[in-house]
Image (cartoon, rainbow, N blue to C red):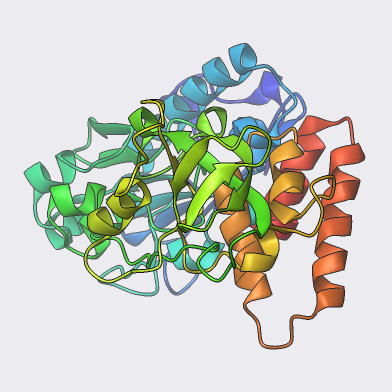
Length: 369
């Protein structure tokens, strides 16, 4: 059944509960509602609602609509789904982005594989009935889920919207995934022990070698570095294994050659031997990741560019450190060659020549992350 805006039900009482699918058009937006259970039959008490929508309807990164238009639509969308849940009382509801799967987890990871429901990932928006609430550890535990919105509905089900911006940072598990699906404590789910190992891409450079580091002020150190805090600094390695500014010779940081111990100790080694003549405006590198290859930061000539400089020039809202890490994982492949590196730099040059920031963001998310 397909409905246009003028035909759409105005209240939950107007919803036809005898259909197993519904396509609802709201102007340019089209939403798909599929009703079924694990056997594919229309069995309302045991059903789940599979809601499909284009990311461009809701997600900031994927839409050319202003936020002032998107936010009210998103609020109405959540209200509509809440009414559907109260009317149908499904076992489970999931909102899936099927038109651009790179903006969210693959749909199959959010689909139930049987009863009890087993999920690999939580959807961006999900509604969970009593059997799932008990499966996840009880009502109070579910209500304490670390997510942008957690709300108890009239029928007792619990609505969870993981992020304010739909499908934001969905490349890896959300804290709600770790909390409900992995059974982690809330604190550990929000800040899990990091599995990232640290290494300095400048550690293999000889004194006199030059390159480009991406640094943040010591006051801006954080688990994830925001683009606005990043500073591109041309550097050379001095005889004491310090990085100094290529133009001013000012001390930037120590090169880290010892990566034993915990991560905090490794980070502190960047400023463990600060010359007495340096000022208090100290920086640490955002590139202390084991995957960043020396080729990404090395310069053969001060006027040349490398992967780091090309990424930093991009006019994008995509996190640039995450982009560099993603490109670095490609460069770690055994068959990655100098020609592949040149192709990567060429692709970054092409992106830098584009004027459409939104298309740049979409290309990066779809092809490079």
